[in-house]
Length: 349
Image (cartoon, rainbow, N blue to C red):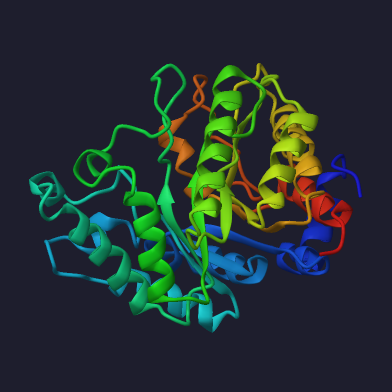
């Protein structure tokens, strides 16, 4: 397969093949993150997700501010809708970001050292227990390591202040008790590129994971968010391969948890833009999927019609972003072909 397929051939190939099937042929899982409102309001989009994806992750339905809007009052109706959609369409269900310093309800600010640990553990236990035996995976803790230059391993968050560094192992232990069969993930960003931030973050995460294993923390996988960018971001396949191998050597699985591509290059023509996005996916997954410990790839969205990057990283020229396998008209892009090619080239799991 070639990323340079003509548009009509690309559309035909995408119509006759599903990313979920191409991934499954190699023992991989392909899925996407989505929101229940768009799945409910847009039947064409919902059908596309059902056709292409073998795993569904709620973008925000299980974030803390929605799942526990008032202290002690849990509300899982959004997550339940997503899980039922996944079940109806023979998809696995993956829960996201249980303990994270963003998307928290306002009442969190009133926590104290006396009650913060129990509130946090209740959040983990109640949420995972509600889906026990029905969720394939959970991002238990998200984005906990510090940025380069802070002189610390862990990010300065309310739970680090109120609970201490044990808040991460404690969250995983509560998660494992709530559902021993689920794949429990530590999820992190800025691990992909060969720049000072990426090098620092990889070293810090590896140190963190080694500590987990030494202390028998029940973690199952590392989630690499994989928010990529065009424009010649420094990339070292050998450094990334070495990092993934070291994670695998710890006995952990690896998941690509939030893949998409922000356009930072000079391209303005549609074909050139799509090619740049596809090439970034190609060079990245060409390395990552060679590591047999990688078990799934999730794109953060499926179509440009509903990408968070529309608002978070808009193009300065006003053109609509195109970071995903399908464009705003639900037509396959070169990114679809890059994913298909990456799955084809991946070794059998």
